Image (cartoon, rainbow, N blue to C red; front, side, top):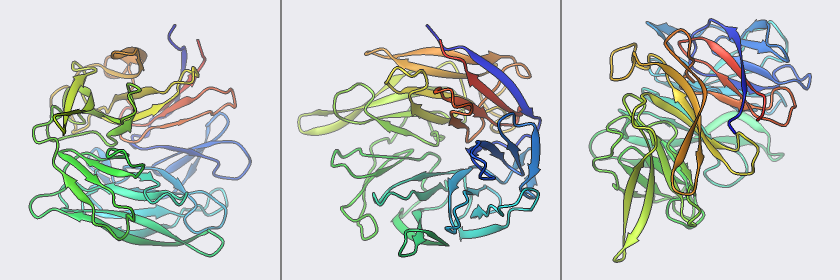
Length: 367
């Protein structure tokens, strides 16, 4: 039986990224999206974060990664955008109504979006931006003090530099080699992590020369053991066209090859994906949806109906369950960086969906 959802409008703001954390320390989760945060539990009170530069239909704000950067016990967040060419963090001021100072982490070039993974296994996430035109693949490590608290400073770790072309559109992280390390996945292949990720070298495997997702792989490309065979697979959406796939790594005659299986070829703009237990059955599901007007109506599928979905693994493939679906203006997409959290302490995970089609919450009402 599919889950039931209650859809609640939060704002007509068209920022494409959102995060969930306790901004003001009152023990209640809040929503942060672009230039504002919305006070829980009803999210009706709207407070400023600060100016976010607009470029046409876009805002230069493509992630909301929660991290206590300066070690003051208050959650800050990391973002970046295509036009600003920088990775940045916003400092939680600790007082409602005050602006959140913006700090530059690094000049990195055009940022498609950014994600955080614990690449070196120290218990603190590293910040990994997807910068398609940039030939450098690098992550940014928060420098901590002797007590393990953030200092507000980051260290750049250069993973790999391509001799020709950029890193491409698409990014994932997880154990592909099967040795417990956090490898980095890109649109055309993957970088195998060394024992010490800071010292290197990382090994490039160009395993996807002609991928079904074309030039625009999702961010993230999910790395997980989908079919229970003990090896991780990859789930990838086409962020700027049609299709969603899971890719299975097989070994034949001593060589590894990849087999790409379609999940949902008839829907477009699968830009952001999550792999988590949304229905509480102890098994993770694939949660995703359409990024409305990903390129402002100028590519395949942008004028199709909009939706959000979760896909359950059946043992052989994925079964699609609809969270929301309808024509533009009625259905809802998930933006470029949506969020999942138990907003009401119900024991169920709810969805926070930003985007050019507004900011909404989908409350998970169970079966």
